[in-house]
Amino acid sequence: MKTTFVRRGALPSASFASHPSLASLACCMAAALSFPSLGYAHAIAGNRVFPATMAVDDPGVSDELNLEYGHQRVRGDDGDQSVNTFSFEYDKLITPRLAVSVEGAYAGQNNPTAHGFDNFGVGLKYLLYVNEAHEFMTSIGVDADLGGTGSHAIGESFSTISPTIVAGKGFGNLPDSLAYLRPVAITAEAGPAFSTGAGQPNAFNYGVTVQYSLPYLQQHVHDVGLPQPFANLIPLVEIPLSRSQGQTTGTVNPGFIWINRYGQFGVEAQIPVNHASGSRVGLLVQAHFFFDDIAPTTIGKPLFPY
Image 1 (tube, helix red, strand yellow):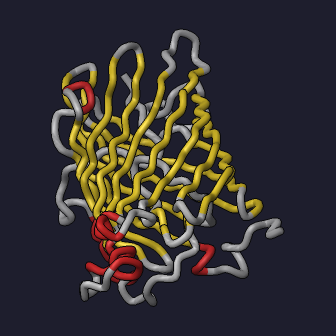
Image 2 (cartoon, one colour):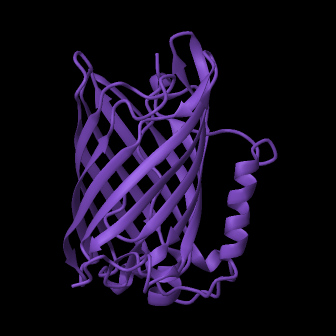
């Protein structure tokens, strides 16, 4: 049975020393720490910045590059198998509200041993609505995993088409009595995944995140004097789920994102919600770059800015 890899992430539980790519991502974080502090250009609604989360899509559109490493043990035909994935997603703004994306992943697994590229994907996403006062934004989009574009050992021969709606809501308008809950935000996505393969099941994918933004606390509630790097941390929990043929699979992902003007670095555990979702806690590691702030007049500029 070939392993299907979910958009924006795969599945992890290994040490940095045993995976050089993890060390490279750690270097990205060290470099990012030297960047100037907050001044974001990503998904913004009023005072709220929604980070680019790892397993559940965020509600914004942007010129950006996402790199992730994942490791997890999942169920296979011959028992548990260890899966390591190195994935990327590049998003390019066509207009300030419309973005196209391309994504891919290189995967390796054992039991049976296989490695190669998974199917490549393309996407289109439109920022539908933003309410600044209520820190709310929503987007609609569609993604297509293109059958036959990956290696025979990892990819599938059929395509999958996934229309999706994504929304985010911050709680900055709570009363003064609940001021310390103002840094809380939630995001969610939902949509079907239609398979083009004869006899292949469809699915319904959905997920939610709960975030607590320490930059929001410092800047818009009360400066509690947090030092760096803690002042730029966003602790969060993501819960990506999928329902197909009467079976729900997914994970609960506690972790954090460190964010500044030019990018972010994130780490999450992946806790399977049931045995069908995996047998051990996995790991996701992310390095993410905001080209609209890194290079706003060149590669970070919408093709049609008006």
